[in-house]
Image 1: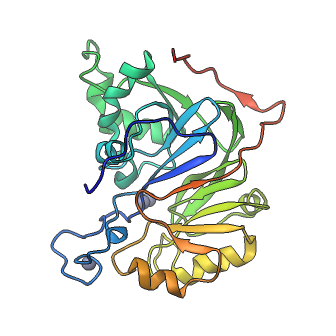
Image 2: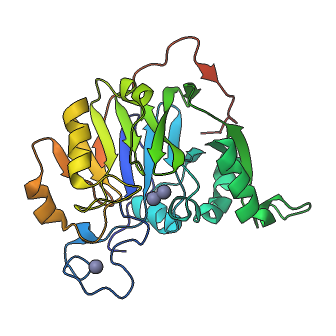
Length: 284
Ligand SMILES: [Zn+2]
Ligand SMILES: [Zn+2]
Ligand SMILES: [Zn+2]
């Protein structure tokens, strides 16, 4: 860890890239390739996660294995909710680090995920659901089951996006004019319709070579060409992509993300009639 930011709340529309690496992380254990041994800190990629500032607080997307290091590094403590894209190990196995959050929230952590993700969490973290588990010793979670229907969260409007991640159905999320689509190989037509007029698209891009469950560079750029967001940040990057060299190969408006990158986008007010879940209130 090179620097630690002071703890502060995110402003509405502020997006922090907590992690931008593929499942192995970069550097890869034992690898001596030029990227893994690079001095450029933008080539040090923890597993994928994003923090998004909403009008009433910060939401975290996924809990990767380096979650604690990421939140300490970025000075983020006031999480009001967690969303899950899917339950793969690189997006899930930092969940135990959420144990501290109820101290700030004075309530269990609201977790928004599909039923299949909840089932995996209950299996993988079974100790959190045992009778008499000590508060503080285990993650305290309050599940909200979501599907692809839009819902209200912390004063914003969140649209879940169905993505095909090879054989797996996973979710991306749209907040206002920003969308997060990591771990995707194919976009169903109804999802493409929900990705029009984007300011920011955060998009899976594993490597130049084709892969069965992730977008390659050419495939990611074809999606950018189709959707034409104002800005695109590529994430879930592997150790075959050097940040500086890769940046120079990309068209205008497209760049690789890196851990600690912060961007600002607009959040639109949510429309009436959108599904609302009640969240615990927090004393400020
Ligand atoms: Zn992943
Ligand atoms: Zn390497
Ligand atoms: Zn995955």
